[in-house]
Amino acid sequence: MAGDKDLSWASAGDIAEAVANGTVGAAAMVEAALARIADRNRTVNAFTAVTAERARARAKAIDSARGRGEKLGPLAGVPFAVKNLFDVAGLATLAGSKINRDHKPAERDAPLIERLERAGAVLVGALNMGEYAYDFTGENIHDGPSRNPHDTSRMTGGSSGGSGAAVAGGLVPLALGSDTNGSIRVPASLCGLFGLKPTYGRLPRNRTFPFVSSFDHLGPLARGTRDLALAYDAMQGHDLDDPVCAARPSEPALPVLGRGLEDLRIAVAGGYFRRGAFPEALAAAQRVADALGVTREIELPEAHRARSAAYVITAAEGAAVHLERLRDRPRDFDPAVRDRLIAGAMIPAVFVNQAQKFRRWYRARVLEMFNDVDAIIAPATPCTAPAIGQQTFVLDGVELPVRANLGIFTQPISFIGLPVVVVPVPLAPLPIGVQIIAPPWREDVALRIAQALESDGVAAAPRPPE
Amino acid sequence: MTTRDPLDEFIDAAASTLRLTVEPEWKPAVRANLEVTFRLAALVNEFQLPDDAEPGPVFEA
Image (tube, rainbow over all chains, first blue to last red; front, side, top):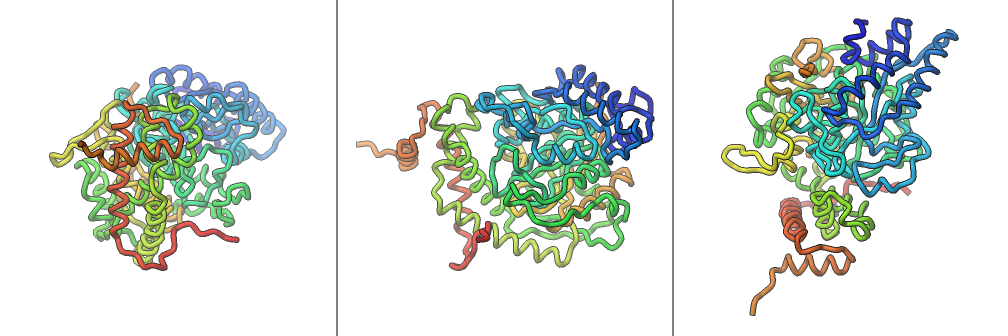
């Protein structure tokens, strides 16, 4: 591994190898990450809590285990951080809110933290996020906005904004986020990162603060495909405490990552996914399509209605989660979140039920499409990172709200739980992501394509200036 | 005699029934959000589905 000066941009895989072969100690890695956080967090505002004490103890235990000749895990000594809606033992689970600061500290880590630490990774803190995950911007009225390391006057995207800022800023090589309508994929796109939203039900969500049970997913953000696969493989497996988590065996992606494209049939999403996008979003998707030799275009049927149905279900289920808090402490919410949740509480049940029926119809049609293709390419966001505080953008002469429109390309996909890898395309001056969408339970296909694009240099997480 | 807007009346009635506070200065944003949601719900509802269409979530007993 490269010298100390490059530790902040080392991959998780390289760190784990270096720790395993004794080139660097886990304790040194953790100290480097803590120093980096102390130096850079003032600028990017990614962390809301740093768990230095437990990280040092954990790193010491890893170094001791190596000293005893024990085999270390595949993520040995890799510092990572989690969106602050994950339970972290000893911390209140904020979920980006003021209200949850009054909660008792969590007694036990979320399962995904336990699984990553079992693989040798070391939790160094909790990350900023949009309030209660009802957000695509990464702005937070209580903790301040997470800032895009590529231009700190710009949004990270959200709601996993701190996750994007922490990984793109080189504070940690790996972070976990959640994605209900795009909250991993939007910050991955705007921050120039690789992000994985696995199949709905693949990873357990218990001991995380919920938003919309019908669509909530958890997953990793990293600076390379291999790191996504390392983390994803370490986190797979059933958990009885999440009734949505599927009772499927682990299906490791890392062993097949380098298999290449072979005879994969790939198409570009047209129609809805070509409208409402700035030229850079279409250019990035085209660059990916060209690199893969893809000329076929397909249209996801009624994608605009899928996005609408996702919007309705999100508002209603989100409001149901927060009804008591809306009654008791409405002034302690971010006003923008509160007013949407209040409106959500007033949605007639018939609308929600119809949206769920449409969801099943749409799922069946899209699954039919996967008889003919193995993966679909689509833009991740309609634009590169907007300025923090920007309320609208003008597209084709029409002024549109930023907040809602950042998710127009991600919502119709998470609506039916499809696995997606976002790959960053390093356009200048700002990167933008492209979605690689696979059939349910075929994360391996999306990751293989991402790996091929990364190997070709088409997809890369650009290192921001400091 | 002035006629009140039905959506304003709906919001007032729903807020009262659900025991939710909607301060006058919050009302325009709540209303705007509800208008968008109703518009998008109408887009979903106008899509014809058979009477026996099943919702997405499936419960296992």
